[in-house]
Image (tube, rainbow over the protein chains, first blue to last red):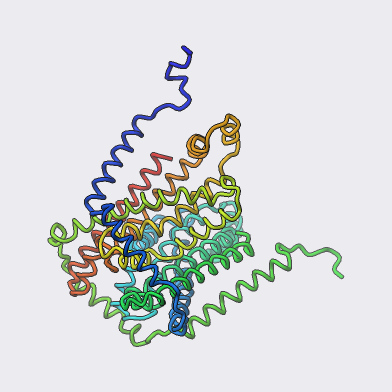
Length: 263
Length: 264
């Protein structure tokens, strides 16, 4: 067995640096948990509550389905309009931000605008818009539009930067103006990928449109928050089940769309 | 009868499907535009209100940072990190159950996928509302909210990574009579490790953003300070908090990009 004593022959070499990193992380974990007062005792006392809470959630109460349907419909409208506005703004912005088509003086401002749009959570943006345009669906639409511009813009820019330049040069060689260059050389190469991005973003907007209502920006979130504050837990359960059903339906639908467009 | 057949890129069924999608999209946009309740006066008033808000935010209350922002901001970061850790701990078993090649029972795969989809469909803030009702306001509710929402995302991507792993080394281990833990640690883990770290870093980055808003429903972190500042119309302080959040989010993005280069 002499051959097996050499460390070079070990099948799985010990990585001491990684082990130290794990140790440091475990130390941080314990420190952070104690700092936030995440103790097992508190967790266990909460579990007692959880039982009572779950008992009050069921059975779900669909009695006020009109209120529920109105809120869900508004969430859907917010998601559809925010995605539309998001595409209308993000697509041209992405064209300006693509380094292979535009000079640096155009790409930097466009990229900075996208980073700014992406850096704040939709809820924070929604609060600012509630202040600017008042309570209601408009604030939600604008907040989710900002989020969509940031996210779609980034993905679309990357897609445009990956296109083959041969077709661009071919169209340019015919003396075509810039608009024709975009419609005949760029759009055909990125269109199906854009469909994929937009359906993904619409999904994301649908999820977020159920949430912006918590800060007063329209949609089912407001109804949900109010039900929570009135301890109306069986109605809360009905709302959450409806949200899950709607989002699953949305996911199935986007999968079908992606299939139709061969994404 | 034409002599040569005309080349067409799509089959008639595909063209029909595309047309249906276009039609449905336009119909949805038109219906939403007509029925959404928007008050026109609010739109015309918006620029003025926006300018008013920015004016109130100036000058930024820089002095507020050490007394009222630093602590909750660190709390938010702790919530994001611990939430990601708990999410990974819960997502790994579910991902193993959801992967078809690891668990060869269709009904187990299906149940695991239902768990992942439901966890993802309920927003972090809605999870936070639940946990605040159960555990009371505070960081515990926020951490669990982040953890439970992240299960869906982490578990789905990890399950897909497991399904893409190569059979070769796993069959070799099984043929040698290795127990399931050895197969998981030495067969699957080395194959999914790059994907795993990529997913964890990506999710942590998202969670840093999400942890900043948990405070609006009382689930701890810097959102509580922001909520208080906004409710008291202390816009200079709100501006300070927003700038601090912006800085942390940017730092997190830079950190994850660097770490990804290092690890992957």
